[in-house]
Amino acid sequence: MEDVLVKATAGDARIYAVTTTHLTQYMNEIHHCSPLAAAALGRTAAGALLLAATMKSGEAVTVRFKGDGPLGPVMADARDYTVRGFVTHPEVMLPPKNGKLDVGGGVGHYGTVTVTRCPLVGKPFTGVSTIKSGEIAADLTRYLAVSEQTPSSVALGVLIEKDGSVKVSGGFFVQLLPDAAETTIKTLEDNILTLPYVTELLESGLDAEGMIRKVAKGLEVEILESHPVSFHCSCSREKVADMLTGLPEKDFDELLQDPKTEVHCQYCNQSYEFTQQELKELKQNA
Image 1 (cartoon, helix red, strand yellow):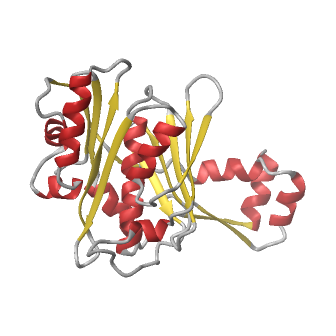
Image 2 (cartoon, helix red, strand yellow):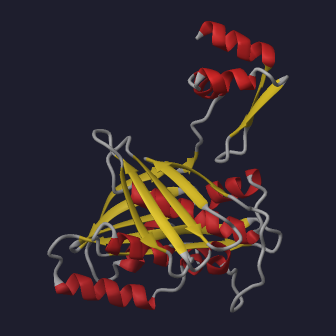
């Protein structure tokens, strides 16, 4: 099944759903994640894509979980239909909790959820709320209610195979429109409360549109858009070179003392190496 994000309306609500199995597996591989880290990162990346879906084309959103758990900060950047992300300590693994991966324990139960939205015009907006569960979806739902005053529901899930690969990954996001009718609210609440986990929906063969129709059962659904989603990191050797030449002269001169300078991108795990001679040439060209 291709990774896809679908936008729809149902009654007085917008519903977004995304499948991210392949891109989550790709992040799992490049970051050498434990099953716990892959689940936390996959949920965060899917959440970022769903939030980006509410924004204009070209605008970006960054989601950052900084809890007191051993995984350390978990981050994802999404723009349109691409996402990138990382876990600070991808090797961390904890014992299962109630037979499931203990994502809450890995992220932590105390800390902050920070969401930064970058519009095409104007300054970025950053909102913050406290972590309560560490399970990602519930904390994003709480963030939207507390920081952005948006009544909504976020559900995310990642299922990991015994060999550590990602079997299914994705989620959905329900956002009520202003002055939503009570009938719409009650129908959605009843449906969401009785729905299986996201991973169970995906395991049963449902795609993003199928999840939307399950969430909106009893309401008239209009599918607005459907787009493939993928992992994409915007870093490049050229961008890193520009960053280096933009350093204060004192800092750049310190780099020139070393035979080689290596710059590492946390998002895609790519490293860029510059020799002393290459740095000198960059400085001359700048």
